[in-house]
Each structure stands twice: as structure tokens, then as C-alpha cells.
Length: 528
Image 1 (cartoon, rainbow, N blue to C red):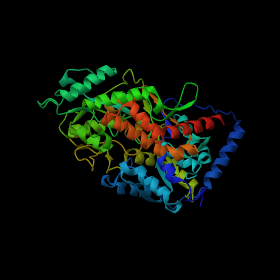
Image 2 (cartoon, rainbow, N blue to C red):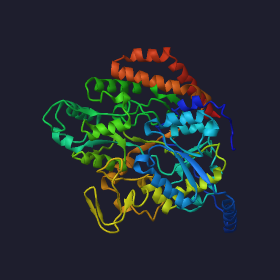
Image 3 (tube, rainbow, N blue to C red):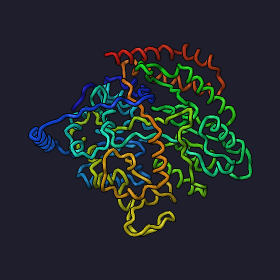
Image 4 (cartoon, rainbow, N blue to C red):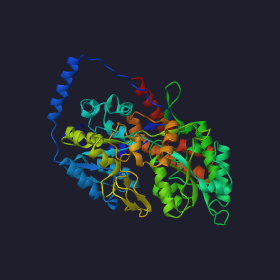
């Protein structure tokens, strides 16, 4: 077994040390061009081919993933069967509930290497911690020698390079990270006689009209509210992506200033200003009173039930998802994707989730080649990961699906098993976020125009989050620190706690001390 460390690792600290990303500046791109002679290149190609031929094909792969792959209710069995047919490898899927995914993942790692899957999908805010603790296999050499890298199909290798930790790659991104964009119901804007906001003053005026007017047109004033979110702060980076209009340039975790010095944004005046904006909007009823306990599914369902009109959620395909689910409830599905309001400037693109191979995996080279690399093969496997199984998730037959008529040969998604009356939009890999050129994409022409529009607006108006080093102090204190920060934010916003009282509590309950120790460790790490 390829283990760097044993079960004695401090995973309890790691799984709570989730504030390991910053969303303030994009990492510098590395240029590593090299010129080799034709003879050397040919020799290198022969060595790579020889190395590839020595990679043992696994008999079975155990994977853990969240709800971004097909769930049981969405016929995961069909997906699993097709994957096994294409590879000849047995696949075991471990899929916790989507909202509880990282809790279960932490418990799995804490239970010891014998219980770890071979490959696991992991968000960036957990990736650095588990990598530093030795739980993840270093796939740098496998990537450098891979057929995928040599194919020339990669559109932007910096997306992979950005996931390196101290020059080593422990997780592979199969798509760009994407992020959240603010959607406003067009019918609600029309009903209150307003245009899409471009600054905070206009944004708040819109929330007021959506809360106190009759935006849903049911003849009753004040039975709706402006905006909802899954928490005032997210559970992973970039933390503020669900309520960006209130945060502006504030950030609740660790980031760098213009001189490259680390600091804790939670202690800055601009974050205190953000808290007051949230407090004011919440007290006026503009923000869903259940925001603190909402999950993302709760927010989506309330949106579909026409309870609120402004929803910051994922760009691209989710524009179509929201639209079709609104229409399935006999509501107007037209949404206005907003450019960032003036005070926000740019949305934050999260560090992309990565597929990691655990250090307990007995054949990591085989898992990289036959599981991770194959996802982007430009053929049947990429189609499976992008659209699912033909005849189950998509088809080219002449038929009518959810009221939409299709001609023979016209690619289209089929009716969702989980949400009857709506059509699937994608599988795990969003084709619009693919990091490889895919000439054979069968569904390229079927991407809805609203999805393309929102994705382009986001791409043109975002900045990338960056990886933050995981230091010993980060692993030891940051879980408790983020818990304290969330509690303080909730108290300020919901209970009207004053800023003086809030930051006195931050001091008295250890937050200021933990924060400073982490800042010092990050700056010491940077100086190495």
C-alpha cells in the first residue's frame, strides 16, 4: 500500500481546516516551454509509450463523489454499467448526500486508510489540507507522462498548474472551476417597473420592491422577499459567492495584499462594513429569514415556488436548470444574469474541484490512466461524463420530450427522473467548462442560449481564487476559527449584535489569536 503516513494523521484537524483558499487575486502563470530536438522528442515519446504500456489496468476502482455525478434516483446504475462496459473495470461508487458530502468525506478519512476509496472528488478548500497530510498521491509524473498532456488537446494547462502545491500535483481538474452569477427574475422586474441594477443603491431598491411590493403579481403586497442564500457565508471557498452584492471587496478568510503579505480579511474595516450591509438588509426583510439554515436545495425549491426573486447561483448550465424548473411550475422562466454591480467589480471563480487518488490506492498509476485521464478522451468516455448514457440521459431519436419536438438525428437531453417535466442538462463535466478541445462533442449545438450567455458574462467578469498553503497552524486552528466567524456573522446579521460586541467576542473566544498565528505561519511559509 502506498502510504506516506498512517491513520495517526491529524485528519480531524484537516477536515475542519477548510479555509485554505483566497479569492482576491489570480496566481501567476508559469511558463515552462522547452525546446528539444526531433531526435530527443522521438526518444521521449518512445519512453512515454513504454511507460504507458507498463501501467497495470485495475480490476476494480472505488470512487467517492457528490451529487455532481448521477444519483441513484437519476439512474446511477445505468451510468455505472456503461462505464464498466467501456473500461472492463468494476466500479464501486460511494455517494453521500450532496449537502453532507464533506462531513462524510472527513469521517471516511478519519476512519483510517483501510476505508479510503481509490479516487475521490474534492473541492479546493479541502484539497490542500489532505495533500499536506499525505492522504493524496502525487500524480505529477503520471500527468507529465500522460497521453492527454501529449495530445495537444488541452486548451489551458494553467488550470492544471494552478492546482499544484509546492510544484506537485495531487488532484486533477477535468474542467474549469466556474462560479456564481446573480440571476434576477425578469417577470418580477417588469412587475415592479424596474431595470436590472448596476450598483448597490439600485440593488437594494430592487430588493425593497421585491419584498414590499407585488413582484409575483398575485395581488398581495409583501408576501415575498428579495434574496435567499445557503448561509451568509459558504462552507468552502470562495465563502462569499452566494451573497456577493453585500460583500463588495470584503473577504472573510486569508488573502494577500498588494505587496504579497498575508492577512485575515475578517479583521478588516471593509468586512465590518459588509456585516452592516447584511444586518440592515436582513432587518428590513430583504433576505430570507431561513438563510442561516438553508441548503442549496432549499434555496432552489423556494426559487421555483416563487418565494423570492434574486438568486446568486452557478453560471452556465444552471441558468437553463433554473429556467426549466420555473417553467415546470408554470412560472415565467426568463432570468436576467447580472454583470457584477459596480461595488463588486468581479465575481470570484472558485478553484476547480479535483479528482484525487488517495495514498491508500494500490495501483494509482492505473487509476490515473483508466479513470481520470479517460474522462477527457474526446470519445465515448467523455460523452458519458458530459452527457450520460444514450437512451437514458440523451438521445438523437425523433421524439417529443417535455413538450419539445426533436427531429431524427437531433441531439437532445431526456426527461429527468428526479424532476419529471424537466430535461437533463449535463452530467458531471459541463461541456462549456471543458479544458480540452473536443471535436466530437455530440451536444455542442444543443447548449441553450441562456446558458451560453450567463457563462460568457461570468467568464468576462471574474477573477480566480488561489490556493492558500496549508500550514500546521491552519490545520490546527482554522476549523474552529471559521466556526467562530460564522457564528459571529450570524449574530451580527440576525440578532443585531454591534460590531464592538462582535469583535470583542472574536478576541475573547480565541479568534484573534488563532487568526494571527495562521497569518504568521502563512507569511513564514511564503518567505521560505
